[in-house]
Length: 70
Image: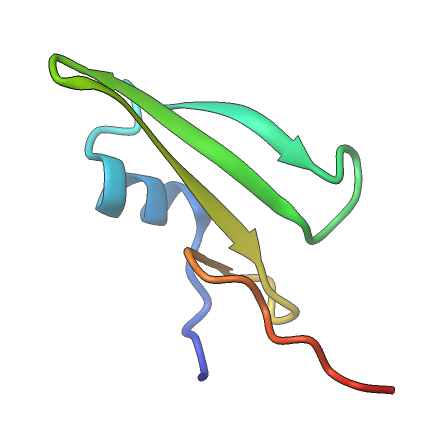
């Protein structure tokens, strides 16, 4: 599946609403390119957290990148 290059801020806004209310709670692996982050927003019904994954093209998606064999 191909993905268009999408910014993390754009995806957080699309999935969680206002980026002013969202916060990044986890970064994996810390200090490295790639990996994933967890964004969280508190709502009246409870908190909502979504993981976003960085892909080889530099974009972010809600699904992890595919593993390619060597």
